[in-house]
Length: 478
Ligand code: NAD
Image (cartoon, rainbow, N blue to C red; front, side, top):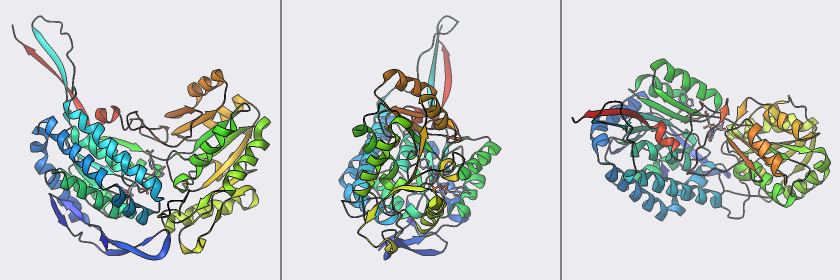
């Protein structure tokens, strides 16, 4: 039986709080593990462990820190099947996608491991003779990492790996419904030889131990990914302490289909963006804005695509999408589905599993809803997308930007001029032509505009900016 554990100061310890049985989202009768929840004391101990070992880790030679991350990458690569299986069982992402996500974790570890032998500063001319002036990245200190459940491996790794290579120590609080996966992932870091206390895992409810982390643990920075509501609270707590923070939050991403779009490219990209991972990606396509001239043809093609979509269990390699991650998530998504009752339902998927056996929500495309409907304005985080007609390019862009969010946006067109105008005008941190809104490149900066983010960026070199601070050094040798 899989069990969640805390890893604090290099020891595997049982959390002090209550224990809950974990059931598979694919089959509500199948128990997959036991979740032990932490209390405030566990969290404070983790903070102490991270603080104690900080000077030693910050002094560890960068190439040596890199070596440990390389080892972790190799071990994770050897354990892809097993780590992916735990995550699929726990949060319902189809196994084929989950394996891809674990391999993304491997790439991220290798990318940041290599930073162990790259430049950490630059030489800058000085106004006085015989002065060497240079900058140097130095660690921030103890970093709190708070992660959601929807990418239970990739998101933690894209925060933890750059934090560690920059010389910080970490206290990680994963989403409670991804705690078995978090425990499994930390086993990889432990086996790679990461010294005790450098990374500390504390599993538990955000509502119980989140405030302890944000208000009582002596943090120097916090990196959060999750919903906008929670993220705003994290930002306020960090601002109160004047510690560095980043909050990556929700999205309501649009794909714009112009009249000249190649449907053979657009339709699979929109289906994938809207329905892979059961729509539970921050970058999922949630609004599909279609120029009227192509509206009928596009709707028909989407309908045909959804009719063929296979909804199955997370461990079935054929599943295009599986269940949503939890009963709460199912209830929330179904409340939006019920809002769509009065609207026209363009297409709804089919399944061979009994939808009542787990947290299944059939893929759904809705049309005929007003632009202020919650279906169009709120993040649903499930397999539901809305089609919106637009008269022309300008109206399509205006609709695309008519949201408080600004994470990702895509346009489908053969017209380069319109494509580039879209890249200029779309208010989103990630903008694309003829590519789906979802999916990120680990070597490129990622983050949102408007209410989707605190306006910093993750991944690529941008992560190194967040997890370090710059010292400007000068030496007179005359
Ligand atoms: P959530 O906000 O409910 O939880 C995120 C994390 O915050 C969890 O670990 C949770 O336990 C913790 N938390 C909850 N209350 C807290 C508190 N008071 N103090 C401290 N921590 C607390 O989000 P979720 O349901 O886990 O994830 C889904 C959300 O994440 C969606 O809105 C999605 O768009 C967003 N997301 C954003 C990105 C991005 O990069 N922008 C990526 C993935 C997911």
